[in-house]
Length: 232
Image (cartoon, rainbow, N blue to C red):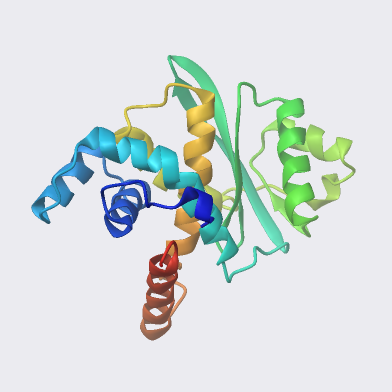
């Protein structure tokens, strides 16, 4: 983290701030639950303090996690899907793209799920990660129309159960959405999903694909990298 955004003007130690932010973003906990967990460990803070900390440092931590990321997202096959999200009673759509290993490539919030929105999502993904060899989607017509506009229709694959990878990725967000009692604005939703995705990519190692020893090594390395953030 840059020296400009140091912790020297805060009374609380950086370790406690990092712990509170990590608990709130990584696990499906409310602000008050994080307050209670820290209180059990002898740390007396208000839940509004936790809110301030994650708003202040969440993006900074997420950027540092991306810099330390060892795994490079794959361009072999992408999975793209969208879910309904209520913001102040109005329906919005959260688009999510993951690679074949479950690494989250990007998240994008829109008011529509038409061809224009799908094309914008695809362009954003391609500009950031390059063009994949396959793109798996559901049968929403917007995907086909957007891919035709980009001359990529031949890359699309649809079919029952083929997009389970990204649908399972939505489960983490749904748990968080429930604990946060919905979202108040598209900006707050976009900001939280971006931070949450970085933490999820860093700590999630697909334990069902690894043997126990490899999983333990990966988990240990993730924790050590997290501890190294903002150290000294």
